[in-house]
Length: 375
Length: 68
Image (tube, rainbow over all chains, first blue to last red; front, side, top):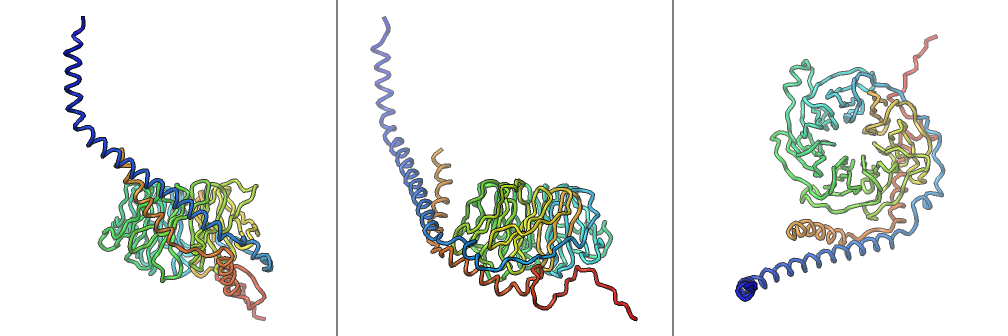
């Protein structure tokens, strides 16, 4: 016969003592679960409210308003300069504010500074990393920032010393916990803005290398950042693998607006020259226009026949044209208001990795995996 | 488990609360602004030809002058 009495007594004993602790623990657990449920419900309600608000105000599509505009004339845009010299895929380029010089970085770790008018190479630098995914010119044109797989963004002053001397002057300013995908100087030679595969953006003091502000909110790699051309705002924008574009307040580090719509990674983002709208390009083969004050997507640029990712977008000076660089080697020239593709530019022999308008809008520059840059 | 959920939810909800405070504009109004900006700046847009004075294209090949 089993000694049931004693074991059941023991059971009764242990269960009564643990039952005293149980109510307190159980209560805490259920309170926590309740507050989580409340928060989750609030989140859901807020999202629905925001969507309803935005849809209510989506009264007339922009293409309809643009119907009365006369169509774009034939632009006559063509490739006027071919910058050859990189031995590897060109991953990024940036214009100098002098509207003439261009810096570019490539997969083999080389950074080249070009005179866009003469096509001469003025500087050729070797960074310590391969896949130099981003490069940028400082506003004064005296500094270059670059980096990539080394998780850093380094800064080097441009001078006419030889390359070996120059290499010594590369100084790491930004450090992320994953690759650095995009960088730009923020209105001065002393502030650097970076975006990273670690899903954050950050602002750094160039002189001291100190982190000034970081920006958490993306739930995936950040692939692109931009700052409005007009200087007075205190915002910047970022976009990436989470298919969202986020607008950040520089001073507080908080996200103030978020935009969704794309169906795949966003590879590029650029403010409209008016500073109140921005365009994005994505792996979903579309470009989209978002307006900050309407707080939503206002236009989409897509065609059934366009199947390749968009890797670079930028506007013409008036915002009327949106240029898009695709993975099928072509540049689409879109009427941004009528949402029609005006022309296609051919020339590159591999995917376009980067596209930027010159500071005064006289030209666009494209960088490609075919190792060349075109103006 | 529950702490991690909280840590994730709280900033999301704070973010949504901030966004809910934005008073958005009608899309038609935003479009008007974009069209007006374009209209003002189109004549000076170097990449869109118009009937105005021909702007200097710094990337164009300069034609040689021939002196008779």
